[in-house]
Length: 212
Ligand code: AMP
Image (cartoon, rainbow, N blue to C red):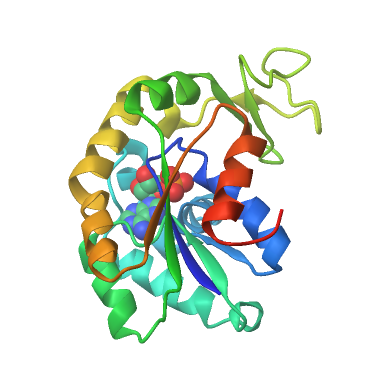
């Protein structure tokens, strides 16, 4: 099964992607994670992506589409995958179509902007191991210190309030039109993101007709 997960930054689609992947035993392909990795490793793609990411803007298509194309050609993606964070524009969706990629369903996780701002303001990520925390819902035992590896658990540059607003604006302007694009193709299903991750998971499995 090839799935696309659609949702504003902070909608929880990354977490949903991980859960569905485990269930279906297919990889999650997150362009955001791949780009962050490229930035960390100082690759050419990473160097050109960083300034856009720090501002909350979209990275140019030629960089992202190249990374995506290589990833879905890998062996573990032969039986399907979940695209998390791609496509982010109608042009990227058209690029997928022209690559001959068949999409079974597009799952939108919908969360209102004000809830997203509250969630992302509290998010903390370990600079060492990448573990994710939330000041309110899942705090570290010691503030600023990762429970798992004792690394620094801080705020991602692009989770700062002004960048979150810019990422939401980008989402509404550039990514939300994909809902119409995939509705026309009979692929879109929308699920309301719930406070509890497990409640959203249950709705997602139901929408995808997967037994819990
Ligand atoms: P994410 O973790 O999916 O929120 O992505 C983090 C950042 O990576 C985004 O704010 C963009 O700057 C960049 N990014 C991720 N996926 C894409 C994409 N498909 N097209 C352009 N930029 C992307």
